[in-house]
Image (cartoon, rainbow, N blue to C red; front, side, top):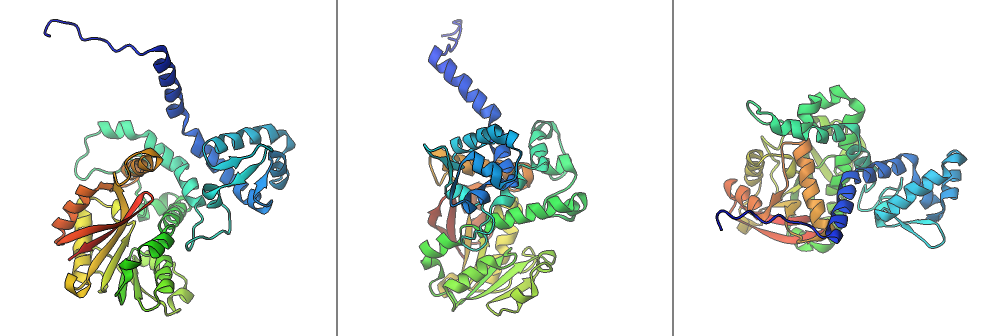
Length: 368
């Protein structure tokens, strides 16, 4: 009622203690990726693999040629990473690889080129961290014209652009390696669990397909499909000549904003989240021009995150963290289903279907 003071929320002792613990965890959780990068830089996952899949801290100190004085500190690092789920600890005091840390072993390949170490190194780099530290200043600024990403605002360069290569060539290469690792991982489950995507297909264009890892995986699983990889000239220049001559995949230099090589289906695998809605509509419009009508089998296959496609737990948090990554690093974003529906409609498509949810991502068929 008017005139009465609003009741002040007073937490119980248990709630206060839990809140304090949660605050510490959120404030200090940056130490987990830093610890993970340390382990990757030292070569811990690879050393455990070479030692038979399990190793004690003392065995790792010897295998990694670390000073003996660092043994107790390495044990603490491993304990934290095991608590975070990176390694599995045993009652015998050893640490084992699990599916996560197995992805960080040098030379191990799953579903093409699955080594994820570049992602760890990039995400924990000073460039990424400094961009995130600039968020508050970025929010306060009123920019004239298109709003740059916090990364652009802090560093004066944009990822994937020449400006980044000029600023720091090694970091530019690391970012490209991280994106390639991110893109290549996961095509295996798509091929194994979404076979209906490729039924009846004779031709497919993979937009932003890089070195053709995904296209080659498709051809290996479905030899009757003729695949074309489209990517920018600066990317195509780095594709090895033997890959271009192997005959399984055709490589084309170009810009998907201007023209997409015609095919029965066009694949956009982990591409659209880098772009604004307006740019996505332009890209999709070019894809629509490249495919035949729906009754002739024409479609665009989008593999990307659909926010909210998982309801709770770590997978949902991962989706939202990936959206924050796009906010900090690019002018793009991750999208909810209603956002996808809107840009598909504005690009002139008649409908879509979410074929399968695979982890944090979803596979979507979009029909002209």
